Length: 326
Ligand code: NAP
Ligand code: F7E
Image (spheres, rainbow, N blue to C red):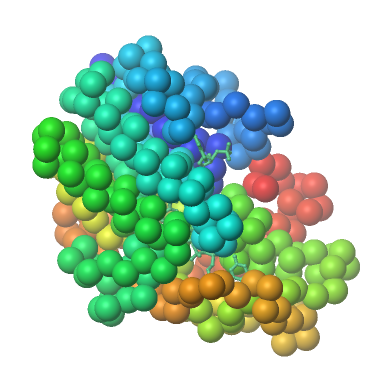
């Protein structure tokens, strides 16, 4: 029988890649979207005729219950969140409502409507924050450094709590940063690739950034959504770190991105205090051994490939050769 998956956050970066992947696996997809005065479907425009859009909001419990009752999914992937760390400092309560309590709303809806539904929670390496162990693995203690990290930690633990209390097949993927040409323009990787392309095309003269020394374990989103699916195919629910096992600085990202267009990053990057955060996460590097062993998952795209892919895509996008990536 055709499996049915509900994806919250389908209009986001990961939602679009997960929808593509699940469609390839033969799934029927229900994409949860919230009402907006403007259309937010750019990333999934190419899939729209193969997905059923369903309207609900993580802030509205009844809407979640109604969606589950009506569309009867076998699997729910909870990718929706207020996901931008700086916004979480400006809007900490909203971030808590969506990114933390939103998880309880959907878990409770599953418990009430059909506890057999398998559930994926998009946990984050931001939960490790000021890291107490290098590299970070599933057993590493958490130390979040932003309202976003704190909210994700709540979502992580409520997922474990519902698994243990109600025997739900609920798993958390502790995903490290993953990027793509569909990444939001405000995140540092896409901000760099987009502006490198603008500079190359003569549309901008400089790139203003914050902390160039921050180090992240950056992978490709298209690889990471496969791990989400693999978690829900296991007999038992569990939690998994999903990462490349390598770390690189923002500075290194700049070096390769400018190199891709034959320019020197030193000539264009300006450090601007406005982009520093009240509390920073200095270093993230994940140990993906458990995901490799248990799920057979491995990052397939190197850091160098990722950076160059993003710059090339933005050059195409800005020249009108590519749609659906902003
Ligand atoms: P994203 O591009 O920011 O997408 C977030 C999605 O959440 C959008 O579809 C957004 O809808 C939706 N959303 C926000 N508030 C909502 C609400 N109240 N009700 C329903 N939907 C709502 O995020 P992403 O990069 O794809 O990440 C996917 C998930 O993984 C997020 O939970 C994120 O926190 C988590 N995560 C991401 C990374 C990463 O490196 N990308 C790493 C670890 C964990 P609109 O289009 O309407 O705004
Ligand atoms: O910042 C530094 C910044 O905003 C990365 C989200 O998907 O991954 C993401 O969170 C680093 C930070 O991502 C700028 O200070 C320097 O150290 O791209 P980012 P993030 O905060 O790591 C995790 C895993 C998630 O779960 C989140 O949802 O880059 N940085 N200069 C800058 N960052 C930004 N945004 N802009 C700058 O100008």
